Structure formats: structure tokens, C-alpha cells
Image 1 (cartoon, rainbow, N blue to C red):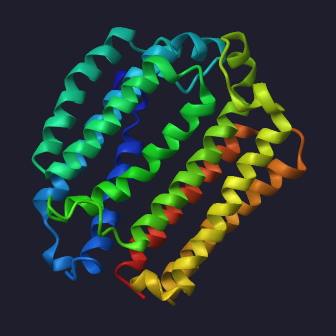
Image 2 (tube, rainbow, N blue to C red):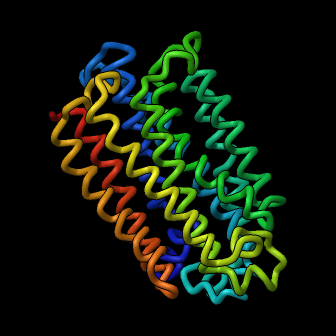
Length: 300
């Protein structure tokens, strides 16, 4: 049982499920707006394919990430990382990568050519990040944020024809991807602050190294508050169609906004806070944000 738990933690399968939800939401928005279709027209076969693309690529690249992060994770005493705890052999991470990474790329080919290109580019970015970009967090933070945003675009592309490509993306898909990018950037900068001591010893180039912890917290707050501001636009702008004056969307997204504003306040006003705790709060906020777009697509 402990081994299974360790493998789950290594592969971060809960992240894969959230990515799949993001893909589903992107697909639903695209179907109900750009394509003029409804849920009954939802291509289940494509969703199954995209689900496994997300799961396989996420699991494999997280495993590779932990393999290359092992020295830093031990230095930072990351008990949440199974390799650092020595619950499983580092070779297991390598095996997981070489098994699931090719499968993710292959599955994306059978969705359509646009999704194949998105998956391939994202996967190559992931390898570059894991192997080379790890110590340059000034850049890698935004790669992680990109990974949080791209599922919505991927999902929208999955239900469009290959000829259409990304030219007809619905504004709601763009706004949710942008919000995810901003929230993801904030979370990664918080992680920089949390890991500052260990990163410094490893020579990692992070935000706190160059601008200090205080300004890093301010920038993280700026990302969160910008995301909060953008989250109101779908409710008040008719261009966002199914979310325009959608009170179900508004009610849930306000919960997200409250959590992000609360976290921003803690970052700005308190010198020392439990970064791990508040990163969990922001993860909950992101989940609620996904839920607001998901339910808002059906009800309102």
C-alpha cells in the first residue's frame, strides 16, 4: 500500500485529473459557442483519448521532474516527495517516464493534428524544463503556468477540425487559460519563496534570489489579484456568451476570488507565513475556478 501511495505521489495523478477536467471544460466551451453544438454532441471517444494524453504526459514528466529534483528535494527535506523519502527507487521514475511519455504522444496523434502539435511541443518543453531549465526559475515558473493553461486550449482544439486549428478559439477559452496562467505563476513564485534556502545552496536562479522575498511575495499577489479581476469579465461582457450574467458561474468564482484575495493579503501583510499551507489554499481556489467554468457551461 505504501508503494502504491508513493507511485501516486510521484506521478501526481491528482494533477492529471485536474488537467483532464481543464480539457473537458475547454471542449464544452468550444462545443457550445464556436461550434454551435451541445453536450449531446460531445465526442466521448476524443475525450477518452485526451484524458489519457493528459494523464500519461503529466505522470511521465512529473516523474522525470522528481528524478532531476532529487538533490534539491533532499536538501529542502521535501517529505512530500517519495524519491526524497526513499520510498521508491529513482530508477522507477525513469521507467515511468520512458513508458508513459511515448504513449501520451501516440494518443495525441489520434485526436487530431492540432492536438498532436500542442502535445508534442508541450512535452518537449517539459523535458527541456526537467533537464535544463530547472535552475532558472525566473523562466521555469512561467513554463509551469503554461502547463496549467494549455489544457483548456487543447480541449477546445480537440473538438474542432484540424483545418480550423486555433484561429476560432472562443474568448471564454482564452480568458480561463489566462486566469490559469496567472494563478499558476503566483503559485510557482510562492514555491520559490518556500524553497529559497535549499535553492540558494543549489545555485538556483529564482525570483527571491534577485528581488528578495518581500518583492517576490508582492509579485505573486499581483498575479493572483489580476486573475481575480479577469474572472469577473465573463459575467459582465456579452462576448463570453454562456457565462454572461450567469449567476451560477459568478457564485462559485467568487469563492475562488475570496481565497485568492485572502492569500494575497497574507502575502502582502505578514512577514512570515506558512507557504505550503497557502499554496494548498490556492490549489483549492484553482479547483473552484475550474468548477465555476464547468458548472457555468451547463447551468445559468
